[in-house]
Length: 315
Ligand SMILES: [Mn+2]
Image 1 (tube, rainbow, N blue to C red):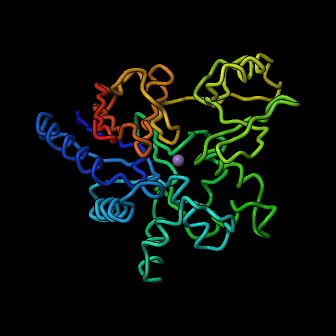
Image 2 (cartoon, rainbow, N blue to C red):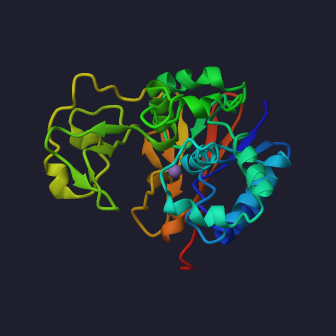
């Protein structure tokens, strides 16, 4: 029986120094583990945008992937970068400017985009799955025909077809929705007349959901809001056509800007559904914690899960 050790890292977003500290911690601790275990390092995507050292972070992760020392999933930020490079995303993303400006040479920029296109949309392992935002089997099956056996885009077809149909001739609504759900997480239309203002002050009538919540009866059970006044308005039954995301295997994902209950990220903070759903994004770039989880397994079961974390605000 083989022992497998997986170190899974949440959204890095250009936080180079914390990433180096985290990798060091993982490496030191790995020396305590069985020497003949099979080791894999997995990044859950969103390596770029927002942080101060995006190019350094991107270069480091790219080297690790190219040297086959790590696997990195496609996050919504890398997907958006690819879409922009293919002229399939015309929306101005202020958040992406810094990354764009760090490339003065168009050739190296094109190389960076070409690398991003080699990142898998998700990873299926014998005992668990990994994805940037939401592991939804029916949605994944829609995009699988456009991916190779490693879940990497066969060519640009998936990008063209998942572009916004209202803005692009080649866009197909079902594929646009599928990629939105997989890389950005599912949203739900709010009941009539209920809306909120997002961080840019835009009026929104749909909201992110806790898709890992398998039992949900009301909007309040699944809408990811913290504002109690807004939540009060959501004590309404979910529409009849609402389907929870089936969780067949444990899944590890990032994307959700979580904060721990206490001062340190614990296993409990990551475990959003018992033995099923684990989020490793603890808002590293907002002064939170860059977080990794070590998952040790044999060929049949998960033996151990351990959290490794580096605070990014210097505390
Ligand atoms: Mn994300």
